[in-house]
Length: 250
Image (tube, rainbow, N blue to C red):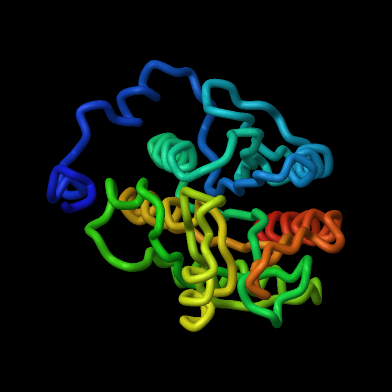
């Protein structure tokens, strides 16, 4: 059986499009970049520090940042998982956004990763479903090299612990088996989460740029689940990261 069930689906246009939906909305001029902030505390911090103004008609919450002259927006409170992220990337692309940055948490797969460490994602293993509706079947989806390098130059001066490597995107957090974890560890995969492969794939489909920075929270590196040792640490580091990205763009 192929996936999706209808072969070659990624090569055909959809009947319902984000462009058509947005034509009925009264939206302001689009920002150049949207930063996805799935952790509520990171979103609230960015809105407060960078003077966010709410934009309606999208899933979750979207804010244009006034201190960037509305050239950067943040998005959050949209839920968990690849499908809604795919919808948002498509709609933001139809709005006119050119660049997408993901700042979220992930589980660590490598023993060398500590709680709060940041991982700049190079590729994402496509173990979810959404990406296959946008790109032909391949093992991974990739970050945009130029934007990934730009994010790295923004975050390096913070001196936060920063690694680079692949992530594993899954739809089923309760099916992260010992055998699968061992397999991806041996391949050098750093983290596991639920959105990044779709985030990259939809951006590529829309001919936009995307990069992702993940903060390690819990860990599966030892073959058992270990909750976050310091739950506040990943959020604190992501808060510093969002400030660094916005400041560099500004």
